[in-house]
Length: 355
Image (tube, rainbow, N blue to C red; front, top):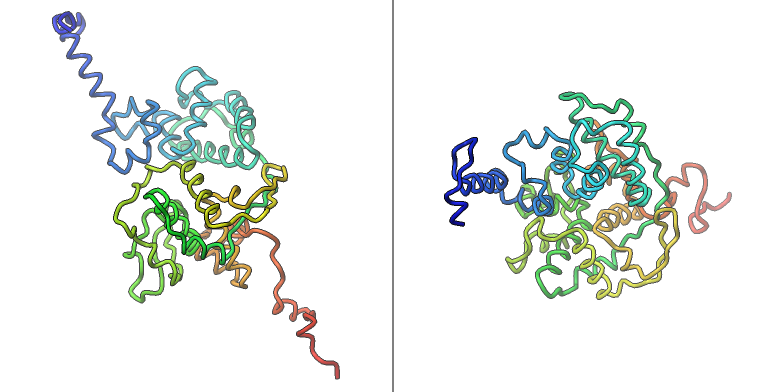
């Protein structure tokens, strides 16, 4: 330390220890520039050193890895794969047709078909967002990253199973938090990112509707307030994890434990990544099951797809996007009796008497 204190850099004539101190402060600019919520959101990326060169907002656009991580921090594995392939952090000049082809092959090796499709969509979205402000060296990135989805049959929870979770008494703040977030997904159809921000302040003046702006689509969503949801709009104990403190893996593992303890264990068959799997139902439950349950239960009760789409924030140019909503409905959609009557088809108990 004595030598470091006395030694000076010939180029700047500054003491070596002072230069080291400046480097240390500069590599932690993110502490001064990012809000606490942002630091939680990008916690993993910060821990892995991706924000070491974050000195101003230009970082979000100047490099591919910065633009990608800023938009999709949960998909940081994709940037790591690209980095391992290149031997350095991926820059915009690395986004070429040849490099994307190689990355596409790695994505297919590490992800199931539908997950690979989602990952490719994130890469294309980041490229398109920056295409207007810089030259992209991959004129055919859209075709290179094109992949087909495969059929998937997921699970949903019935009203009776959801009631078991409502009546469940969790131990520990993590289970209380997961129970509350999941029930909000099941009972109002909101995305997990929106559930984290919904509070009693989102109840409108009539007291009958939740109104919020969806974080993903920036559109206003208006959904009837389920009578059983009101107690879960606030943390009953006043203590629970902050957004970003629980990873998706921890959330799903905790949720499956809750479902197992609630006896949601019927033998179930699902279709994932082109393969059939069987097991206890709780094993296939995840954070996405909440919204699927919301859509499926309403559909089975005869609520029109257009109305379900509006309540879930599935809008395209201001109109309900029922194609998107259909993806959330588990099982076959039965034709109800009212529709059958339009075609002169009747249930046995409802068939008119012959004259």
